[in-house]
Length: 368
Length: 209
Image 1 (cartoon, rainbow over the protein chains, first blue to last red):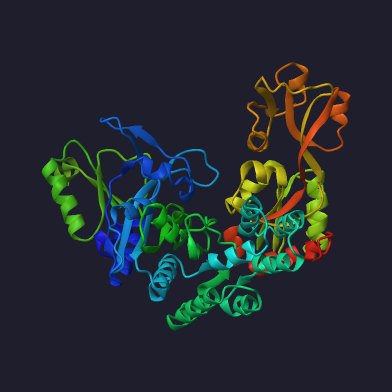
Image 2: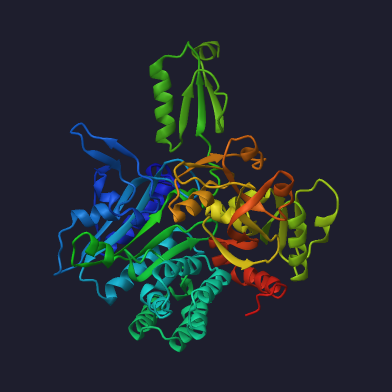
């Protein structure tokens, strides 16, 4: 293998594959600073994966943050265009806590954003790119999509207080049907409507399994049609096997609307991709355009990388004080020119795996 | 093969019996020995016992696909898992308890001893009451007796320990029971197997829809 290619880590290879994929569809790389003014996050804490932000005071007295999120920076840095869709991808590190850990971590993240007049094709393109991203990570992967307008309509239809509605959405997100039922009962929701919501929360599977159920429920027709069209798009792209409709994908409705989604690959215990339409975030930030995007979390992917069995070097070249640096240099260059990796040392390292050990000494050469 | 984390102790044995009745037995698990992992290859299940408070960690991190954890642990640690079923066993309640004659003086900050910082914090925040949380890892009932705290927030089963120490339940926060939980990614890739377990156990609870 080309030594440059073989020197790449699995994460770097994945990144290159994803970058090539996004470029194929006209996405331009977006670069940003490691830091942002803290204000950007303070006003949108619920949008962040974790509300903890690493802050510091800049020399001019401004409170700054190591960015915990990329989307907010891209939205802030984008003009409010409505004529054409701005398509960008990024590859950045973010700084936040992850899972139940109480420590900050540097998390490599890649993803893309479309900002502008988002149409049905644009949504399909982003979903297909999310699916293709997962495929480039593993053959065994799943993309789950949900439609927040449907969830919104069925929860609003119950006529329960906003606080109960928030709790119901939490139950749907956890597939917790027993508490959902109890909440509806306590709030005095109409039994039939509560049952309809329970059916929606329990639904999950391929479009063929879920779409008939949605047609039988009082879902907004346009939203069901949109899911049907997306399923057709996935069939056209030959990616229908990995598409699931599942309403437990419940992104925060203060920021998201319409289609939201997340992706899983076999062997990684948490979602590795997350995204959705975030027109409501755009409004909060004073933008009139629509937007959709997703992020791929690369930090967890090392769990599915096969164990590295390549030696630290093909040749361990041991030389003693009798050998001149020029001679060691000639030997190492000859080996690397022959396509081998080589580590030159005076003494054998305590640890390390080497294909072979060669010893170099002028003394032996003279004796010979 | 599905990995299933069960909580060590009496509750775990009860719960295992539910899994066995659901059609996923592993008889070796009840033998007295030092084995940690028990497998029934034919049924595609592998059980292991873990500390009750660790079950959710095993499931969230994917070391177990499925597990059984108390609602108290789920509310306190908020693991990113699906909560598929209330097993209606291990029933108790999360409550505020204090000396029998305790009267809350709203002019003073209330000192609350607990293992459940988040649950206690959220409960008092919902009441708008300013509190000082004193985190303890055990023998919580001792705190008000020695003046370390005014009240405690803890799990109450029968209330015997409270009564014997001159304490009483002041307010109930929420009911607690054991829940069937699953890792989100496992659910995606082993949905049929996990749903078969859920359905088998659902038949044993009063949950039939």
